[in-house]
Each structure stands twice: as structure tokens, then as C-alpha cells.
Amino acid sequence: MPNFYLSCRSRKDKQSDAIYFYAVRNIYHPDTKKQSKEQISIGRFSNGRCHFRNAALEHADLFKGTQYERAYWVWRETLDERSSDGVQDVVACDSIVNGDIRRAGVSLILNKVASDLELDRTLTTAFGKDLAERILSMAYYLSLLGRNPAYLFAKWNQNQVLPHDLPMSEKDISKIMSEITSENLTRFQSLWVQRFSEHDCLSVDITSISSYGRNVSDVSFGYNRDGEKLPQINLLMVVSQSPLLPVWFESLPGAINDISAVEDAVRIMQQLHCGSRRLVLDRGFASAENIAYLQKKGIKFTMGIPLHRFSEFRQAWLDAKAAGAFARPECSVDLFDADDVLGSFFFNKTLKLNGHRCYLHLFDCPWYRVKNEIDVQQDVDRIYRMLLKEVPLKSQHDQQIANECFTVKKTPVRGLKVTSNPQAIMKLKNELAGAFVILSNMQKDSQEALRIYKLRDGIEKRYDDLKNDLDMFRLRVHSPHNMRARLFLQFIAEILRCRILNQVQQIEKSSKFAALRKKTVTDILWTMDPLMRVQLDTHHAFYMRPTKDQRLILEFFGIDMTSRAWSSAR
Image: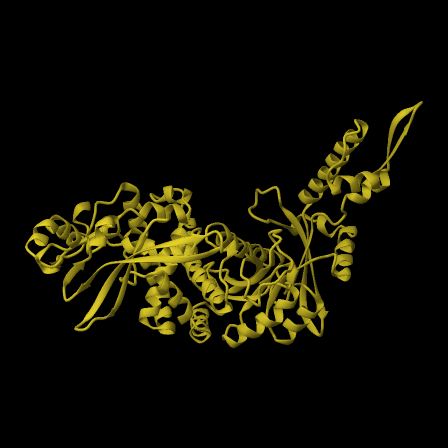
């Protein structure tokens, strides 16, 4: 059977506000495939006193680590004596030492990050102080335990120091979802967007997120980038290239493709007062209609061009290669660094497109072309040997190569004979391998255009973080409103994690913090999680002695270890 957990619910008593204690557990019914709750009333707290029921005897573990733990054990120790004298099961909280011992390491780090970004102030302006604290508390949970379902936050927050200091049940989590309205969410997005420089480039990309939701109209079948055979939604995200932080997100129906998402994205971004920014888009967004639309709206952009979709740009690259434009050493550029084997050569030209000036940057990377030839030749040689040995070809790719490049004959006299077709094999070697084209109306320099486009890789890492470290590989919500609210909570958690990641990646190898460069964001938060904060009665709270790794992290993030709060560390 599932374990019980403690639920504390506030409601008006006859004389004052009271907090009622319930032992709650979830029960799954296999016959109906539904879940129900069993709850047992075990006491209450009101007027500074704890009132416990006899049912609390079986649930001592539920009060462990809470502010009522001491009162519970005083009640247990004196239960027989008070029962024989006819005294009620009441313990005055002012007659005992109240202790509050909770984990505080995660909040110490994330509070500092949220404060440095002024994320907490922006949330407060958009949602109000109380809801902003609850949103941040949920985001802290998702930052640390994002792979776990959101409903487990109700148990996790009981022994954590969080921006919202009161315990929250599963019902409170649902309440948070319902209070995140489209109005205040849009208000937050407009405030958050304005915190980024107008001269910064914004990377735009879209990904698919599979969902089990049945009553969400946006969930539908479409092109799934993860190869999942599930309905999905599409998540459009904008990431700033300078601080590499998420700027804005929007959920789109699952049947929407990349090309058709551009106009809606631009329209909403302009309404959020960020339409004048510079956009960087990958090849999935490239179409003649989208290019014309961006030019009409006066938006600066840098866009990758798929050569199979634009015959005029493909011919321009072939003409440049035939003319030897990529052979000049003064036209060399570096994809990553000067010593990298992936060095490329460029050729650029200015052209008029839809009445507007654009810069076409053509690149050739010989390493990719050589690699393509090697891969093709290895496949051909492997399939040739398999045909000679009469090994069955299982993959459709191998069967297609065998049909196009080989003729197989078998006779009783001559036996098996496999004849290759050199012309067909040469066609497999892509002449456009290593070719890459960027179209821009803001960057005339090819090296800078390539640098800006490669920085777009940051948004791919954000998606990877969402799907692998956070709970976004599957959406488990069943209403359109909750889906958007859930995406927003993940968005806030991703902002916090990105800030930590950016700070760690900037550590120099010679720095005393170099050991942190090898840690992931999850590693850093897990290292800090066991740090305890202790507060007894009205005494000043203090932190337990931190480990060596914890002190290094605290020093790196600039958290002041004052002697009063950190007396054990001095």
C-alpha cells in the first residue's frame, strides 16, 4: 500500500484560525483504473496549542522535521499520565522548545540567482507577492527534481526552506495552476522581455513535446522530432544570445510545423515590445514566404538556408565552387577555433530580394565532404561483402543501396556474382556535402554571421535540458489552462538553471573554482541540498556546518557567510 503523507490545511475555527492535520494516502483501484484519497484526521493546531487524536499514534513519522514534532512527542510521552487523570490530549506549544530544522541549501543558491536576475521582483510585479513566492517555490523543486512529477512537490516542500514558507498540499499545487492566468502571464512576459538589450540577437526554435493529455485541443499528431508515436504540442522558445537566458515561450498546436509558426511568433513578440530585436532562425523556418514577411515587417534576421528548398541559392553555391571562390586562403573562417579541423571557406555576395538588400553567405567545409565520401564508401563496401556472403539486408537503407548500386546474379554453373555500378555509387556521394548557406539582412561579415548562427546552438541545449533534466519529455496535464501554467513553471525553472550554467561555464581553468566546471547544474544543487538551517523558538536562525564542496559553491555565488548565521563554519 502507498505510504501516508501529512497534509496541513488552514481554515477558520470558532475562535481563531486553525491548522488541521490529516494523514493522507493515494489509493489506485485497478478495476476502475482510477485513484482516490484516504485521509485520517490526526489533530489540529490552534491558539498556540496542539490537539492530537489517538489516530496520531500510528503516524509519528509524519511529524518528523516539522515544527509540531516536539509537541507531538511531548504528547506521546505523557499520554498515559494525562489519560488516567482525565486531562484532554492538548499540549501547549509555549511550554516546549519549538524547533524548525529544514534543508536550506537549494534555496540559498536559487534565492541568490533569482535576486541577481531580479526574477523575483518581476514575478512579484506580474503576479503579486504571495503567488510569486509559490511560483518560485515550485520552480525550485523543478530545478532540483525536475524529472519527478509535479504532485510530489507537496511532500518535498515540507522540510525545505522556500520563498513560500507554509506547507503546500496537492490541492495547493492545483490552485497555483488555476491562478496563473493568461493576463498576468502575459504581463510577466512583457516585463521579462524588456530586461534584455534591444541590440541582442534572439535565437528562435521549435520542438515537439509528447503528451498524454486527452482533453487538450492543442495536443494533436504531427511531425515529432523525438520519433514518438504520441500526440504532441509544439513549444516555441526564444533564447537571448548574450546572457543565454530564455526570453519568451509559446505553446502551439502539435500539427503546426516550423514554417507556419513564424508569422504568429513575430506578431506576438511585437505585441510584447520585442519585435525590433534581431532574430536568428534555423533552416526549418526558411521559406520564401517567411523571408518576405520578415522583410515586410522590417525585422533584422539571420537564417540558415536549406539548399534543397532554394534552387537559386543552391546554384549560387555550385557556381562559387566551380569558380574556385572557396580556394582562396584569405576566405577561411573557423567554425569553433583556429586549430579546429572543421575550418571552412566562405564567399559572400549582396543581392536584392523582394526589393530589400540581403547578404548571402556561402560556406564550404571540406571535412564534411570527405566524411560523406568515407561514410558512403564504407556502406557500399559493407553491403558488397554481405551480398557476396548472402547475408540478408535488414534495414531499408541497405536494401535501397543494394538495389541502386549492385546487380546480383546466381546461376548453377557460375554461382553467385555481384556487379557494382560505379555511376550509381558516385551519385550517392553528395556534391553538396559540406555546403552551408546563411541569408542575413543585418550581417555583412561572413565570420560574424557564422558566429551568430552557431550561437543558436544555445537554444538546442535549453531544449535538451528541458527534456532530459526537467520533466518535459511527457506532459501529464489534461486541460489547456494547466498545460500553459505547467509550461510556465518549467520556463521559470529553466531560467534559474541557465543562469547557474552560464556562470559555471565562465570559470577559468586556473581559478580556484575550476572544480565546479566539471559539475552539472543538477550536481551543484544536489551538493547543496543537505545543508540544514536550524531555528529554535525565537532565537536567530543559523546554518549547520557546510562541507568543503558546499563552502566552495557558496563562495562562488557570493553568498555572505556571516558569523551570526554561519557560526559553525567559523
